[in-house]
Amino acid sequence: MILTEKANTGATVGSIVAQNFRTADVFRKHGIDFCCRGGKTIAEACVEKEIDTEELMAELTGAMDEGVSADRDYKTLSPDDLIVHILDVHHAYVRENIPHLMAYLEKIKKVHGANHPELVEVYQEFSECARELTHHMLKEENVLFPAIRKLWAAAEKGEKLTDGFFFGTLDNPVSLMKHEHEIEGDRFMRLVQLTNNYMPPEDACTTYKVAFMKLEDFQNDLFTHIHLENNILFPKAIELESSMTKN
Image 1 (cartoon, rainbow, N blue to C red):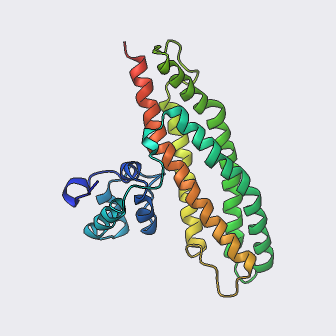
Image 2: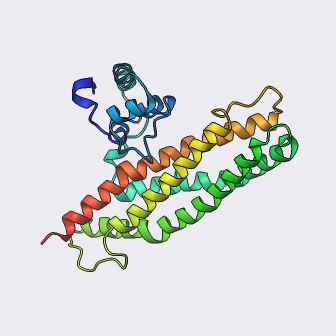
């Protein structure tokens, strides 16, 4: 796929990444949020970040022209398969890595906090993130994802959706989940600033360096996780619900 400035600057950032996930690295490099606020157009993102539009489009084209992406084509997955992937890969990653990161960040806060007071805020921000993400995933696992899987199972059988959900339409929980995604996306933008883009200072010990590397890795996984939900799973689910509730 070849991008041209004339044809595609009006495309949203999220839709471009949904077409080809290689472009995520380009947006990430320029500090453009492709997941939580992926509804912005490329033109809007360039204005906001003061980036030359032609240069960004050339980078995106280059990323897309590198060949067939090694990443899975997530758009071709069914809602059910996509949910299984999100649970097995991203929810599992969050749960596995939160305790380790908390331990690292607490240690460097105690040891280096006097010379680097920003570590106190880094620890506080991630602690809040850990709490909120844990609750967020439970809501997805116990409410939203089962509803989407119910829809998909009915669609596979050729059935119409006769009984609605207790929360109304999918728009209601989806809107809440997307709002919570934005909160965490904004939180990590603050963490990027506090950590100088995860660059440890010259006096950093090995634990300090590992903590920042793991924090950056956590952000990258989270942004992929949110992208898959906001830009692929949720639109698929809402479209499916709409098609099944038409008379």
